[in-house]
Image (cartoon, rainbow, N blue to C red):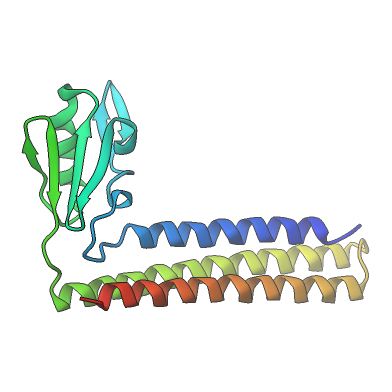
Amino acid sequence: MSTQPIITDTTARMKKAVDHTLHEFSTIHTGKASPAMVESVMVEAYGGMQQLKSCAAITTPDPRMIQIQPWDKGITRAIEKALQMANIGVNPVVDGNLIRLPFPELSRERRQEFVKTAHRLAEEGRVSVRHIRRDAMEATKKLLKDGKISEDDEKRAEKDVQALTDKNIKEIDSHVAHKEKDLLTV
């Protein structure tokens, strides 16, 4: 028996954890409007809940504005309501069948709040990577205990898992540093 399946699974799970953290970062408002900030807002339409990106075109005509154009005029009010419920800090302005989200200039205090949020999300990402490391370590110890791998294989697997952990945490750290720089740049 080899430890390769554990390493492969750990790599995939850690990548998912990092990707999730990066996606969470993209929802933090840096003063520049981005479609990612609203595309996963859930809208009540057609008898069910749908993501905004599946029922409207989302564009950014300028850095401080998100423009949403529903494909069906009948759900404009539902989209407006969903955006208000999403609590993204901006009130939607309905103009015919267009919905605009104008983003104000960020105050220093608001930027600091967003930096704290980014650091909290980064720490959640690091914790999730460490949990995956713990699961992998336990799995290799179990293989050793069951006599399916040698001690050398176990030590090698632990070293590989630790290297993956360090690499993924370093990636999260570099992204949070970049996000912080973006947030504090006026």
